[in-house]
Amino acid sequence: MGVIRVLIKSQKDFFSGLMFMGIGVAFAWGATTYTVGSGARMGPGYFPLMLGILMAVLGSVITFKALVTETADGDKIGKWAWKPLFFIIMSNLLFGALLGGLPSIGLPPFGLIAAIYVLVVVSAMAGDQFKLVPVLGLATILAIGSYLAFIMLLKLQMPVWPAFITG
Image (cartoon, rainbow, N blue to C red; front, side, top):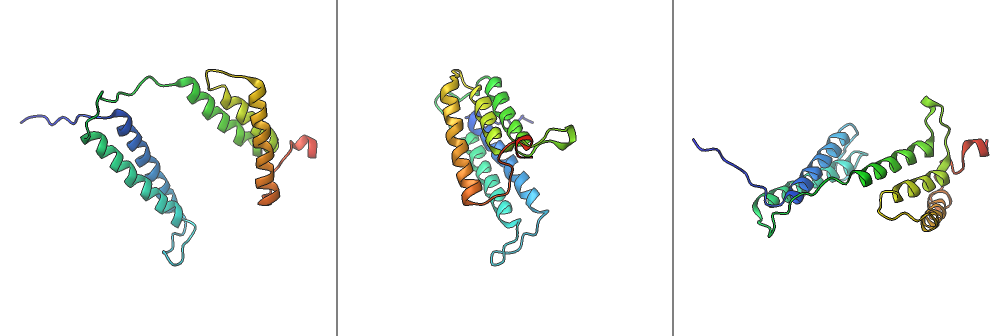
């Protein structure tokens, strides 16, 4: 009996499709812990469930096409970009920790403005060129825009300034 080998025609599409399927299944599974409801009376789990199903289906299509559609050069996956991966993930973790604080380790909330500055500066370190002045300019624009959108317009209740300043 012969061994059936599946050749991946496009590695990038194949792994992208697997990622979409994994995230879609995770969203759909997580949505089942909420009340889903029906199309006429949607519950809080309806949208994430439908989004998860859509992402899983999209991932399945992308993965299937990667297995059957021939590409010119085989579309190999390159080396992992560890530096950008580290800085982008770290910037998001720091943003969350600074925005609300971490009471378990005694870190007070630093608020929206400080968290945005740290997010932008740390994520800018992921690139090949880092220039502090343009990065701080971008952080200022994002901080002002976020303050206007989330605090002034949407009236969200979140710390804006560090706890040791506001009391």
